[in-house]
Image (cartoon, rainbow, N blue to C red; front, top):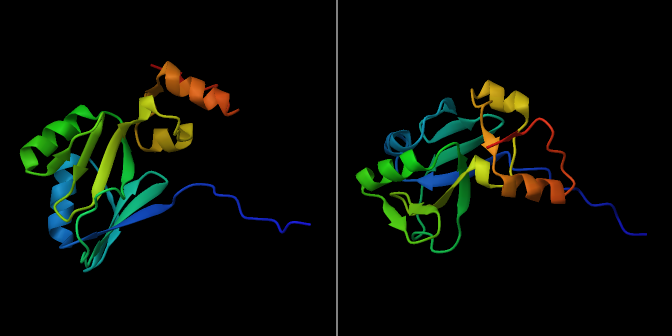
Length: 154
């Protein structure tokens, strides 16, 4: 008999190595509206409802070329505008990909366009209860057997 395996449920947090916490908070503060979950001299925790990003000092590796992670936002356009004014390296892509000043490769996607979803309680707590899903995203969810009642279309 095969041994039972743990099932992946989600991502609690992603840790990014940066050069300086204050500089990193200033950079990301120009791109995104956020609240700090907590901080120390060498770490800061950016709240994303039921998840968070941990910023940690000590980046020593070269800039990322393929390794990346995706951030979900309510609206990608303001991020692009802020990036254009920040001097960050925007990468050629179909969407919005960039390297932060420390070489972390980040993709920015809109909530409405992807199968990822948060519960109504988390969206309400984040004051994002009005966010909707595109028809394509709703179909992706439905095709996986994920109930979409209560998710807004739009």
